[in-house]
Every structure is written in structure tokens, then in C-alpha cells.
Length: 281
Image (cartoon, rainbow, N blue to C red; front, top):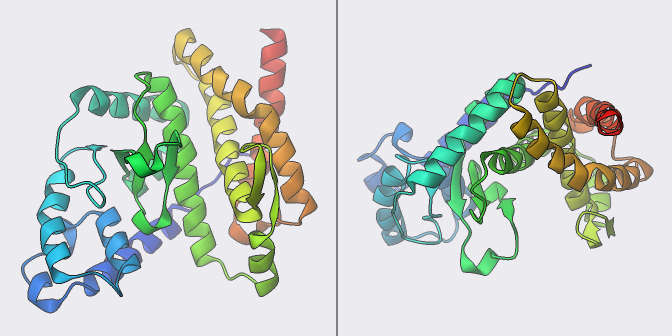
């Protein structure tokens, strides 16, 4: 059994989000630009802020957004009006993508479908190593302290998994009972604190992708150094995954209404295989 991502659904969702965001730009502004000139995070922001954005704010952001797209790594221009190049981080981004490409082609294809940009954390969110926000779909926030491409690959897998789950949740009909259940707080072993079940579910899915990725790396032709560094991801998340997955199962949220069950079950196989690799290593 292998993990399968619905790339057609991601493509349809992204195209729809982009068109909806572009349609909300006032006609006297939109006629000067084409849809293809805007980044997905920018158009997602426009869609999310459709009730309170001003023409002036848009006029200030549009040229920044066009310039920001020239680099995969930089600042979150939706919060910081800064345009600078970071060649070392840019190189790390592409090195990390190549690690994923050489170990898990299906996930590499998912990255290419989402086409993420990676932005520095702003001071108001500095407590997290990385995060993603559906309101800025296509953008990953990362604190950039690490200069290790293997660690960057872990972050990419983690955050792209959140993006993918956001697509699945946004396109899957959900009962009011499930919606209410997602709001309930349970203990999160990842956070060591109570957290809404939707957050725990997101954590389990992201960890699922990370565990599969680590096993893929171990079975690839990548260097032993990369394999050893990637194994640290399993050491950090292997046991947390089991505990938070138990919570999700107990709450009946493992059922395949989001199309993610196969990936989570595949991660259980990876966890077992990685334990054996650790014992035999």
C-alpha cells in the first residue's frame, strides 16, 4: 500500500481559489493585470479579506507580490513590506526539494502542484518553528535558523501536508456533528497541552507524511549522512504520532471522509519499518 495524493483536486482547488481572489479585485485595478501575474498566497489573502481590503492596500501590495515571486524564499509581504534576496536560504530550499524528489516522487509532485513560497516568521509569530495558514494558501512560514537541507526537507513535508489537508477539508462535505467534534479540546502530545481536535488531526496527518518520507529516504539511494539526519525526524515524532493517532481513532476521526485514511495507515507501516531499522541498525 502506498500513499496517494489527489493532485487533480489540489489543482482544481488552487485554480478556483485563484480565480475567486482575482474576481474580487476592483475592475479599475484588475484590468491592468492578468491572473497569472498574482501569487496564490496573494489571491488567497484577497479572498479571505474581501470585506475589509482597501484599494490603496491592494495598490501597495500588487507590485511587491510580483517582485516577491522571483524568489522562493523571502519575507511575508502580506505582513512585512520587505523585498530582499537570501541566496543561502534559496539554495537550501532547492536542495531540500531535491532530497524529496530523490526519495518520494509522489510528494515532490504535490509540492510542484502547490508551488509554495517560504517566508520568514514575523515577530508576532516567532514562537513556532514553522506554520501554514489557509488564508495565505501556498505560503509556508519558517524561522530559517537551520542551515541543514535535510531539516528544510522535513519542514517542507510537514507544512505541505497541512496545505494538502486544508484542501481535503475544504472540499469534503462534513456533518455538523463532525464540525462540532473538531472544535472539542483534547490533550495534544505534540503540543503537550490541550488543543482542538482539528489541530490534533492536522498534526497526525503531517506526522504521517513525515514518517513515510523518512522511510522513503532510508530506502533511497541518497547518502548515509542524509539518511542519518532524516532519521532524527522519526526519533522526534515516532512516539508522538502513536499517541495522537490513538486520540483521533478514539474520536472516530480516522474514517476516510477526507481521503486521508490510506496515508495515515501507510504511516503506521512506516513507523513499524523504521522501528525495525533502528533496532537492526
